Image (cartoon, rainbow, N blue to C red; front, top):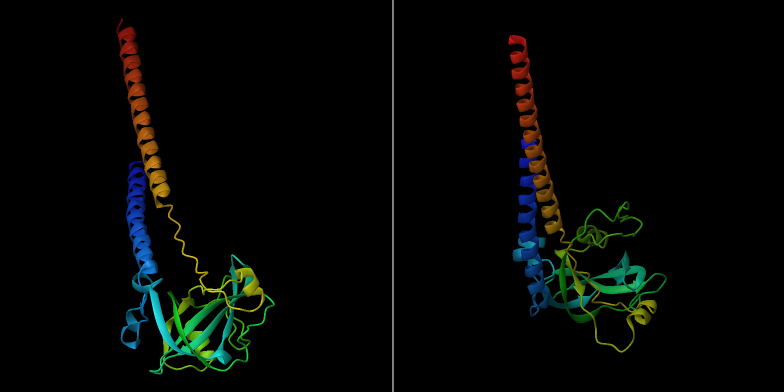
Length: 246
């Protein structure tokens, strides 16, 4: 029981450590999201672009949209089921970045389908590639069926070169039309990035510490009961010895 008690204490301490890590992460992400947009990371820092240091960074980029190479990625948003539209944006330096232009409803036709390449300035949130597909579904590059925003796989299927290892979720555009209406009409709706970090570490920590206290209480109770039984057995033996002697 002592080993179990120490184990519960260790698990509780670990959850407290995770709690402070999660709070720090939430604070850092909040600063990135609401900070002024900075230039999207270039090739010289791509190797350092990790979730802890860059994800949800507010960035800006410019170039030419290659609409013919757009990939439709299955999605479920607050507007319902549909697709994310990932379109390559080629910069003047030849570097290409995948931009999630936004969401369209299932059955809607991308309004930019068949459109000529066009220059664009984009602002949005940097996101980390999502390899291997979605839950129970692998990406099918040959069939052009995508269930996750796998930058490397999409870039290879479109024969793109010098592609950034991340993609950018475009922010919402100013328009008077409702998001639902635009999504149904095939007009990509940006600004739907969900930023949510479940933080149950305090509850977990209290649970483990509570179990540790219960274990300590059980040890105390068992120890006290053992002492009582030993004391009672000792008295019974003394009384029997006195009777035998008499």
